[in-house]
Image (tube, rainbow, N blue to C red):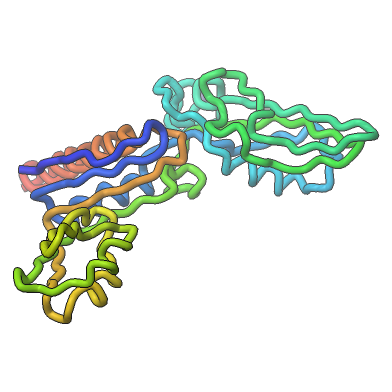
Length: 274
Ligand SMILES: [Zn+2]
């Protein structure tokens, strides 16, 4: 049976946990679904009303697309599945944000993500201080940005994560008669080993194994590092669009649906057609 152990959760930011009694293919399926199929909201179309700045419309639109927006809502339809507009785009499947900025003859200014004004107050930029562009003197920028749900399969801007990876649990075996270099082991930032007097034990291995400690902290052959492929450390960093735990839960639900779909189709073909 699978066991989960929580290591670190940071509110809107990152999540680190251990999955025990599992295997790499299963964890990799979840990882790939997170990258490709977990939907978030991002700006897809920009209607440029006025742009007298030095930056091309397309550049601005591209930058707007990359700003993570709060996607923790469940009453916005996926555009292609929208029951009211059949994919054309309406207020049940898209949301607008406006941007109106002007500079006078004497001042320049930076335009930030916080300057986007959402029509639906729940769909706002997660970070306030993402720079969009610098405006020169006496310039105007007026636009309407239209955001919608999408997935990493369409474009990477919809991916819910920045970093996402898993690694196998390291296991360190120390020869009981091993001689060690206390100075090396104690100065290591990863603190793989705990030294007290003449004794040395394994301390923390979750942040990776330090090569320096293994090669210079001990004499050759006194420590052995192996990796347990059935105990996996899973780590992800959210873009902020979704809460980290929800990213994993949504990916698991999608995997579950894919399997249900497979079972149904398989049974249809195998039992009903013969
Ligand atoms: Zn619609």
